Image 1 (spheres, rainbow, N blue to C red):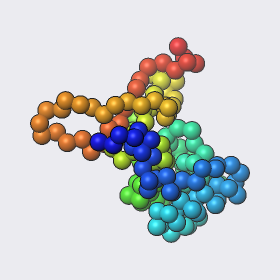
Image 2 (cartoon, rainbow, N blue to C red; image 1 turned 90 degrees about the vertical axis):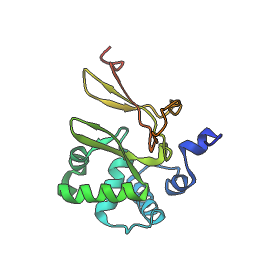
Image 3 (cartoon, rainbow, N blue to C red; image 1 turned 45 degrees about the horizontal axis):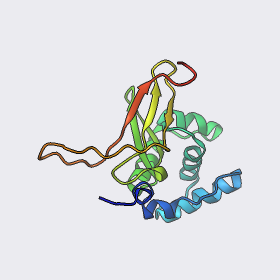
Length: 163
C-alpha cells in the first residue's frame, strides 16, 4: 500500500497525460491532442471531440449525454462506445458508476488505479456530483479469498438544492 495519498490519487502515468491548464477551445484542442499522444492513441476528430466533452464536464456522463453534448458533431452510438472503451483501456477514462443501466464515464485524472473519488447522487433531482476532495480509505478486513480490483463509492441522499 502506498504511503503518499497524492501518489495513489494521481499515479505518474495519469499525471503525465493531463496538462494542468484547461481553458479556451484552442487550449482544449491542444490538451486533447496531448492526452491522446501520451496514451499512444491516434488523434482523430471523433476522439478529440469526446475528450473535450469529458474535459468540460463537471460530472460523469453517460454515452447518451456525451452524444447530446457533441451537438452538431454528433456521432453514432457505436462509435462513441468504441471510443470510450479504447479510452478506458488506455487509462484516459474510467467507468465511474452505472445508473439505470447506463454506464457513466469521466476522465481518470482524479482517481488512482484501485481507488476512485466518491460520487453523490441526489435521490430527488437525480444529479450526480463528484466529491473529488473527499478521501475514503480502502476497505479492510475482507474475508480470505476476496481480492479487490477497484474500490468505487457512490453515496445517495439529497443535494443542498433539494434538502
